Every structure is written in C-alpha cells, then in structure tokens.
Length: 259
Image 1 (spheres, rainbow, N blue to C red):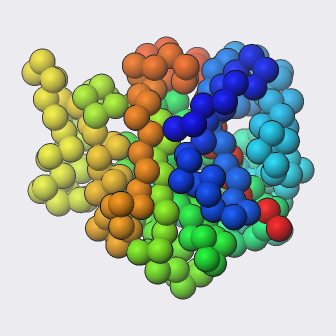
Image 2: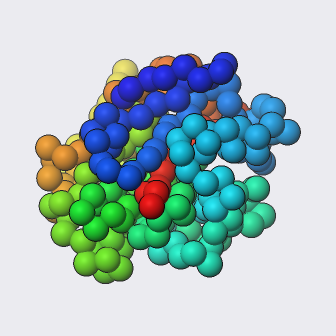
Image 3: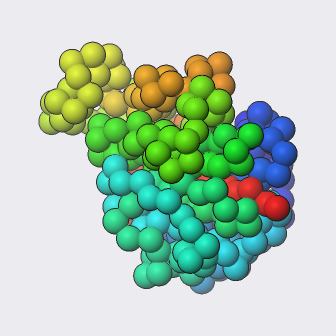
C-alpha cells in the first residue's frame, strides 16, 4: 500500500485503485480513532472523519456508514441515505455489514480493528461495494454476497471488478476455537479447513485467505485482487481488538466515486 503522512497520522491507499478515474479511497491508521462509540479521543472523531474526507476529496456531509453487527447482509446505498452514520452509530444503516453504491459524491465508510475490510470497484460502470468481513461475516459468505449484490443491482460482470482487502489480522495470528471451524465447514464446505492453520498447537483463522477464496469463486480475477500485507495484530500502526482489547479504537476505509 502507498503510505502518506498527514498531520500526526498516516493514510494508506492501494496504488491500483488510485488509477481508476474518479474513484477516491483511503485507509486510516493510528492515532486517529474513527469510531464514536469506543477508543481514545472520541471527542475528536467527527473532526477526523471530516479531515479524512477532505484529504481524499470526498464530501463529508454525504458520508454513509453501516452499524456493522457482524452479519452477512449487504444493501444498496441511495441518495436518500446521504449522511447516515456520518455522526455515529445512532444514525447508521442498521443490521448490515456491506454496502454497494452507484451514486457519485456518496462516499461510504467502514471500520475495523482486525477484521478484513473488502473493497470492490467496477471502473467502467463506476460502481463499488465494501464489506466488513468479521469471522462471523466471513463464514456466512459476506464477500460472496457483496459480489452477488453488485451483479444483481448493477449487472456487473465479476471478471471486471478490481478488489482490495485492507489491513487485517494475519493468517497465523487470529486464534479461534474448534467451534469456529465447525461453523466454517458447515457454511463453506469441508475444504474450509485449509484456512485454519495450526500454530504451536493452537488453531488460527486465515480470514484474509478465506475472503480471497470467496472473491475468486465468485468470478473475480485473482490478478485483479490486491491484498494489503500489513497485519493489524503485528503492526501497531493499526488498532487491534485482539492485541489491545475491547476499549481500542477503530481505523476506517472511506471510499467513493466523485462526479
């Protein structure tokens, strides 16, 4: 990822996505906490959300966010949703973890502190989608659903999508129990076991690899999928629930097309 220093923080971008005309995106990092409900400096969150949007060339006033309940649900964002979630979870789009959008100047924002954030863009049709792929969302197939919704809503050809998976827990760092493997194999099939490597006798979930697999199975060309190498658990530039506990903040993905 391309790293840029802005004030007292670093902002990140995928080089391949920067080449898409009219598409703007940014991934935030510490010390800027982008959550309003937890973490440090919540009194400055809205100021920082505005600053990130201004830097990225996206309108803060129309920023949209989901409440992210670890679901597989994906919905279409319309102009009627402009501003929902901009100021906090109390106004966010409820019960969803994925968003698809074809409107210009209607950016979306999603949050993480270890979970993969998946971003899909179709440059010709100028549509995009994002998903918060927690372990629950991943085993329920939210990334597959994100591609499906882009197909259903906008008649997108998955082979024309450009995908990115933002910084998240590394493949051998996100420890889980046997119950998560059982759910994954029930939902994704027996071959899901390959995404559960054992490290020092402890089971871990490779959420990065599982979501990559969903993208490829849904028809996205692997050569058009870009995966951030940064691990939120190992890299303290990012907030990490597993490393820092429940009171940690959240980093964010902000993305959208401009007219």
